[in-house]
Image 1 (cartoon, rainbow, N blue to C red):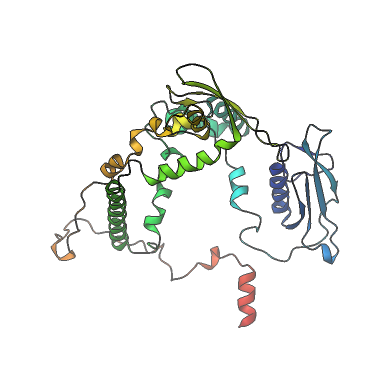
Image 2: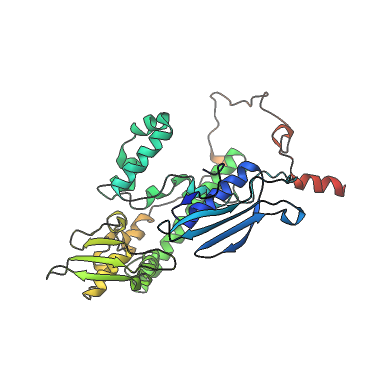
Length: 353
């Protein structure tokens, strides 16, 4: 846990050490700088070390502890005071936020194990989750595969680029802006699909980029064939003795479009393991790609008809109830002082004045 550090504290991987140090720094309202970082050593110190704060931490990957990471040096708590008060800690990055979210997995038994851990932490959240169908909650239980990659993304976040710049508008202007930008987005994607079809392309460019990325990883796989029909394979990742990663073993069934990693059956296109199996027996990997990734299907998805909105003069007047603003919630323009957090930026501006 981030607020409890001591010598001989063990971690499985280096990333766990880094996340723990960040958690500790946020709880202590302090920060640190990295002195040394390598595949076997991680050393950090307080930002105010030159001013006398002795706080240091050093962790190494110990062969005596089965290659686990162990804290070998820790000088206790900070003796300095950080005068800077910021709204967000400078170590609060996307990696730390992701480590606080339940791990992403496409394996059913891993999903069940992590769900049990979540239930141990919060029974109330577990009761709320149990009321949701697992097919609507997790990709690992998506049997039909109709959702593909949509469940990994909040659909409200998926239209962020459509809404970019359309903030703090009146309701009418906001609705018009959303409509116009959606039309522009659909027309652009439809034109892109038509252009790819005109060039003789069969699959969308996003799929081809994903296949290319997976092909670049196939050089780290060793494939063994298990039948004459060229449908069953076993692969093994090359183990890297420096990073201590690799060595994963999975089975591939091309006819069933299945790989034990879970990517093949979830996204309906080949993972790096399945591509390595196809290359081993000289089969075109695009043979096992779902038709939903073809440009014809993409064109059909964006072929919806859009029409311009009528002008304001042609709208019929409303003789029903009128919406009146609540005078209680009205306030002056600008950020409310009661919710404004004073930080170093405000101090700098006040000094300039």
